[in-house]
Image (cartoon, rainbow, N blue to C red; front, side):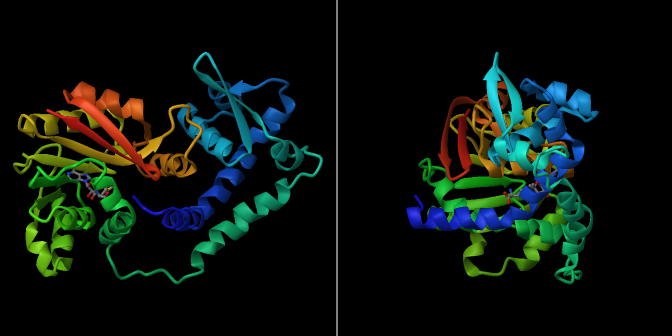
Length: 322
Ligand SMILES: C[S@@+](CC[C@H](N)C(=O)[O-])C[C@H]1O[C@@H](n2cnc3c(N)ncnc32)[C@H](O)[C@@H]1O
């Protein structure tokens, strides 16, 4: 387990990492007129009604509203298993166009002029390929959380491991340092694997190998344990079920899958980082962040049994057996 001091450090890091996104969430809700609608409405409204009245997609609006709740711009009450949203005092006072101390125009200036300009603060690092940059960017998180998550369950009996969509191998490195007899094969797209191989130089990495392929079409390398880290969040439910079913078929009896993902609270009240990532997934792909019961449903549908999970920081380690 990370110490309380380390957790505090990581919390501060996240606040700074995602700070730009928090502003953008507030700007977007302002510009769409969410706070105006809720100021005028005398009652709490569901995300479906807000989306319909403002002419937006329902899914996008729901994610925006949930993130606004964690940011304390909106409040949410649950009725008949549905979230109903209303303004907080802050939103009533400052965020609607007709608020008594409206900041709408300044917010619009920040959003339209200052925010896009901020991307030129650093002259872009333009030489490295986008794919490789993405791969190493993703891998960074595992030096913070990898060991804590991989030790949430005793995996020492699993020596032959395959990290499906394992990117540049950052998590594999954490696995072999935690379990000294283990070997890990990273299964990822051929282009990602080529780039990762070039960078893989340290001696301990002879216990890490790379296998290029398409996880929807090509057979997986044999393994006792399959890891699926931050890969399900890229895909919609049907595609996740397809991938998990394929992994289930590849598993030996007694083997299993370890899913590592951000987990949204069951009542959808946080964590903020989960809601922010869910909005990012909407921008980048068809994916989303999920609650524990949503993960359980996916793993069950694929055939996995004895599903267990443990939360570490905002991530969950979810373990399913064949
Ligand atoms: C969001 S990244 C997660 C990477 C890594 N597991 C991590 O946690 O840092 C998803 C990974 O899935 C890989 N991927 C996407 N589609 C794939 C496919 N069809 N076959 C194999 N790998 C794929 C990507 O190249 C990428 O490395």
